[in-house]
Image 1 (cartoon, helix red, strand yellow):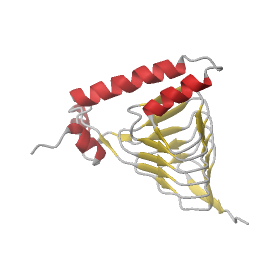
Image 2: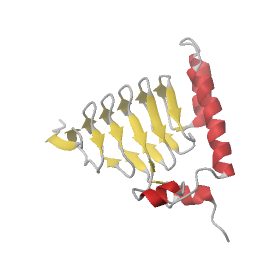
Image 3: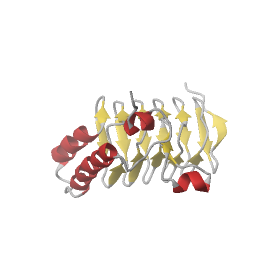
Image 4: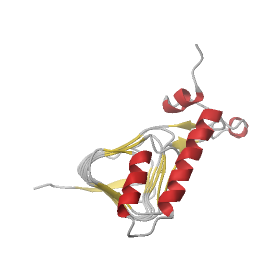
Length: 187
């Protein structure tokens, strides 16, 4: 039995992003995102309705438009999630976000990646690695979270950081590439 391009994508294998099923699913998400991003500030219920069609939310959450993603269905947010203006989540693989997570403006979360070998890249293939963000995390504005990264609980990521490797729980991380700046003592 043949494995679908979507199954390859979610397994972290090379897949063809121009597959008809994937194109159709991205088009569905784009239409919802367009509708979301065109709502007026007082259309809060409409925004929530659109977002609930797009992403998996376990509780209360707020995403300020504009917001962009690839599929939406690969995004799972916990209770009390907030994403400020300009959030981009390229969810070609799972993005699992815990409870009490705050994203500053223009935070970018990328599961998608491309081969570094030019010949392979020119074949049009790509791959994606999941991202996990723990509970009680604050990610500062303009930060970029790269494919395959896990961020532990109770973490603060400084504005403008580029997170290329896992960040353990209870630390402040900052920089490009993001490094642990100090431990957090929770009282």
